[in-house]
Length: 168
Image 1 (cartoon, rainbow, N blue to C red):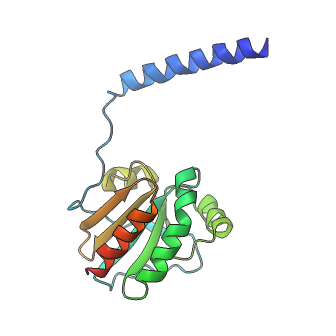
Image 2 (spheres, helix red, strand yellow):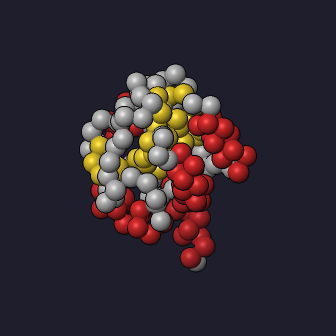
C-alpha cells in the first residue's frame, strides 16, 4: 500500500514540475562566462575572517550553497587553492543561503577563507548569473571574470585553476 501511495505522489510531483517549467518559459538561465562582470556588492560576512580584500589585482571567488553536495565535495580543493593563492591573491566564498546557515556550514566544513552571504540572494544570482553551484572563478580587480569553472572541481581542473592563478 505504501508503495502505491509513493508512486502516486511521484506522478503528481512529476506533473507539477512539468507544468511549472511550462509556465516559466523553460529557458535555462544564462551562465556566467569569462568577460562577464561579477559584482561583490551587498555582501555580509558569515565568518570571523571577514575581510574582502579589494586591493589585489586578482581575486579567487567560490560560489556555493549549504545544500549542494558537490559544493561540500569541492571544499577540500578550494582550501588547497586558497593556500596556493594567498596572500598575493584575494580569496573569498559567497554562500547563496541565509547568514545563519552559512556560519554553521563554514564551521562544520572547515572553510579556511572569508565567507560572505548576499543581502539579497535572488538579486545577487540574477546580477552575477550565479545560477548553478559550485562555481569557481578568477575575478579581476575591475570586476571582470577572467576564468570560470562551473560544477564540482576535479583534480585536473584544480591544476588548471592553479596555473591560471600563476599566470597573473
